[in-house]
Length: 89
Image (cartoon, rainbow, N blue to C red; front, top):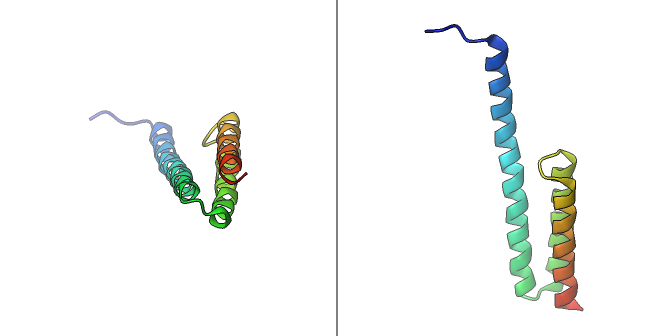
């Protein structure tokens, strides 16, 4: 068996750890969005407002960490706010 480059092995370990963390954050954002949309369709404005704030916080955190693009986070926040305003205006 060939000898592996130590730095390549370390780099692979690091990328694997990052991949798992990033996957968890993305999953959390998607779950929050689904919960928010369900509450919107149930027409519960108080709970929807709380979930919107939580979703915005998660999107901003993911964008700050570079897990999702800054413009993608802004676009999602805008669409969710638009949905809230259309439902409860």
